[in-house]
Length: 71
Image (cartoon, one colour):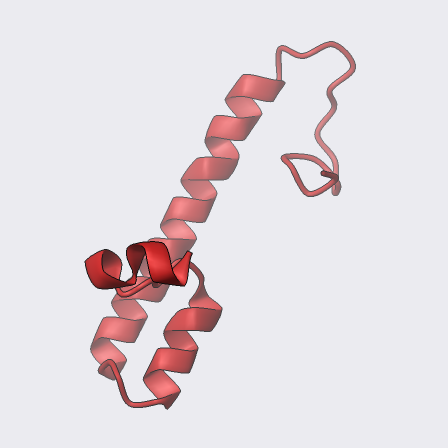
C-alpha cells in the first residue's frame, strides 16, 4: 500500500505509520496529531458502517469479536 499511495497521501493509513514518520522527522507534531485524530474518526465511522451492514445478517450479534475482528 505504501508504494501505491505514498505519493498521494504520504501513506498515513494507520497511526503506527504516522508515529514512525513523526519519529523519523518527516512530519511535524501538529500534522501527526491531525492525522491520528482523522484515522481514529475514520476507524469509528468504518465500524459504524460495518454495524449497519451486519445488523441485518442472520445470527449477527455485537460482541468483542464483532465488526470484522473475527475475520
